[in-house]
Image 1 (cartoon, helix red, strand yellow):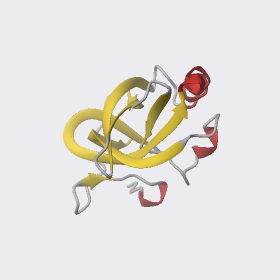
Image 2 (cartoon, rainbow, N blue to C red):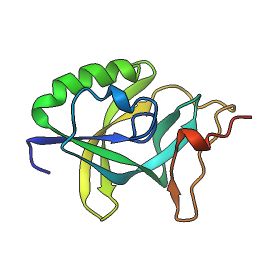
Image 3 (cartoon, rainbow, N blue to C red):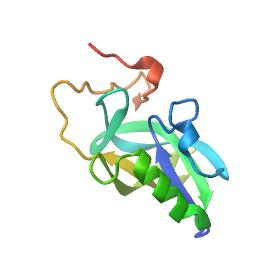
Image 4 (cartoon, rainbow, N blue to C red):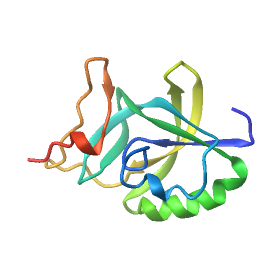
Length: 137
């Protein structure tokens, strides 16, 4: 990926159509569907990504002009409760058409509790979270 473009991997409430989509502080160059490897947990009315496991977590790759990075991090750090609720990490992702992309992702920074159900993979082996498919007991 060219140096002048940065990517963020959104797998939960920051995705298009979800409750925090409006918090992106600037317009993306593009939004692509993609995935990274990990596990996803329902920790409240939002998911938590852990970089452990071998399942593909489906999400969106939001691409921005690199000049927007400082502004993006300032806003998203606040939205995501960085660094206590989520940490930030650079993860290897892949678009659905097979293009590798390195992206910043917010990784859940608290222990997974027995009350946090794991989001299961679908028939294609992908984990996909939406607010409409939450399963709270």
